[in-house]
Length: 116
Figure 1 (cartoon, helix red, strand yellow):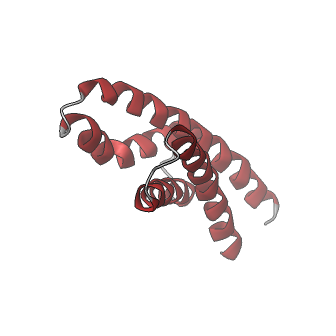
Figure 2 (spheres, helix red, strand yellow):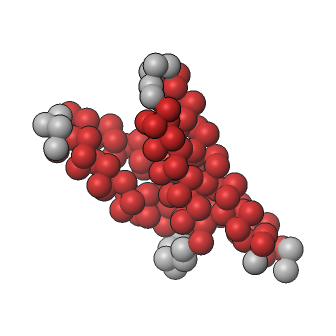
């Protein structure tokens, strides 16, 4: 069970670090709380993806769960701020990140199974 949480943490850390680097690289003056929010969301998204089994292909599962978990963010950033042009880039970015999460899940679950 400990190995499962370790692998889930790895799947969470990778997208958190990627997104943190992206946000900080684009806007180095971002507040600590924005960077914390971004990191926490993507860590939680990857962690959850690893622990949840949708009985789908790992990449498809990663995309579906990521889109589902990101939907409030899509609403807050595009609909509520009256910036519909942000909607599609947010969805595309989530699909890309969901694919990365799914591939990590597939790789680490295979590794977890070989260690049993």
